Image 1 (cartoon, rainbow, N blue to C red):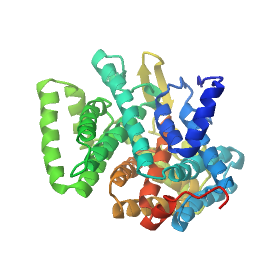
Image 2 (cartoon, one colour; image 1 turned 120 degrees about the vertical axis):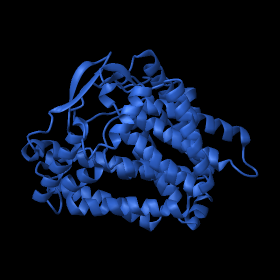
Image 3 (cartoon, rainbow, N blue to C red; image 1 turned 180 degrees about the vertical axis):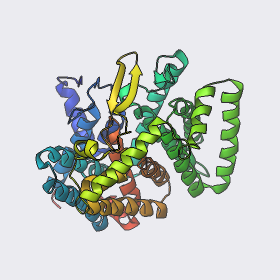
Length: 448
């Protein structure tokens, strides 16, 4: 792991930064999103622990939240949200204690607590008003634009990761070993930009901001397309549909027409990504009748997770146990790994260490107890966002929808995992009842 951070910050800078962070901790949440763009140089995907600059920023946010709690600045977290987060910790703890390798599962327990509880709760506490929410959503857009520019350049200059033997796959600053990361960041940014633009419609809206966000969303469609990520395309399409339906059903129809026209011009007229995109799109329809190797491997990994769960139905085999039990439960036709290649790493075989489905991963490693806990959290957040999707809440609904759809064929892992935590925090903020929000808008003094 290669991680470069400033060794010493000037004291005047610290004196100015610390009070600003204390007054607006959402700055750390935004920094967490932006620091995902920092290249890690990681070349060992099998390492037990990967610590990135974004992880450090998220942990700093957790620490700041703990300090605010000790100072008496109690966050307005509802009972239902506390119970949902507590259920995740309890399920992971039970699975760790009953694990086939308790010592090896400890790191998994810590990671699950960080991703699904500590960081989301800290983000929730940091989002005190509408400005905080817009700040974090803006960081998603900024990160996506950074990655989108790099990814588009990789495709146009043929300096990306290998796809069908050609170096044209856009991967941003993440490299071929984290092949899904750029498309994830770009998808989040596209949805956040679209939601921010929709929020500025009508009387009193900022027309300049609305046009800028629509332009950003339109641009990000290109790097998303040349990422050749079917999963990100599907999740973005579903999330954008939900977003537009909640905002304006008539706008959904107009957007579909405009999107189709733009695709015809870019792909049919200018030829941008033509063969790769159309071939990739056509392959979506054949995932059941004639699946390619990557899809076939994914089906086998899901079956493997199902067999592991059958052996450990109640509390699962324990966090991080899937990779230990994979070979003893997998069919013989499962590939040893997936191919990855770019100009930096050359050609490598990336081992398949997870079932590439978050729900199957939870079921196999945490059993029925775990899947019930995660279902309670996800459904609770989704229902809450659907009921209160106004303003920045529209973006939270879209981002949460993206995550839940993506979890059908992906799971946590890689540089962008911490973004899932930020999305859950945004969703928890939007799902909260109105009375909790109004209570939080009045800050409490340290003595209270």
